[in-house]
Image 1 (cartoon, rainbow, N blue to C red):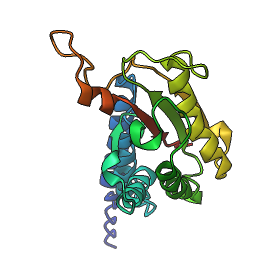
Image 2: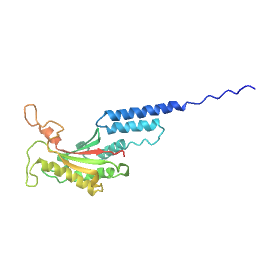
Image 3: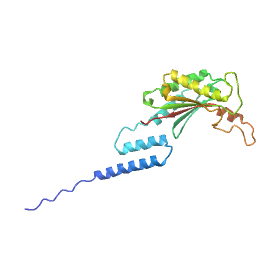
Length: 218
């Protein structure tokens, strides 16, 4: 009696498995070779890996947050006094200091309050419950002193704290926030020209509050 030929073993799954292992290897090599991971890039890689592994959960909270905040900014009357960008850690929301505070004061203006109410509603969304916020106060290099604020160190810190207190009052837990006063040590634009003369417009733009928005992928 003729022996029945053995059926060939289907090894088609090996290609998918090999692709998955390669993706994982590339991911861990990348993470090991960078000292400061780019969270926006990490989010993109995570979404690509989910696609490769057949995981349909491709939610990208950083991109969702950016879209929501862009809508918030566009809906205000002072959208030109704010800007939204990103860095390696997350999103960066900048607020014009002269618009959000009166000169030499850490009290929020009525315009600032209206804007922060809208923004805080977005930050409070359940989908962003793992986000953290670092609020920085920046001033120009112009000398300043008052009975309440002996120098720009105190003023910049107080302005950052005012924003933090407001956000806490709207329901954002304080453990997710920090306030930092930076005086003029991190200017966005040079305060002086090459001849040492002040640049008024640059000084104005350097007076700002910056909200760093960092997601957590735990």
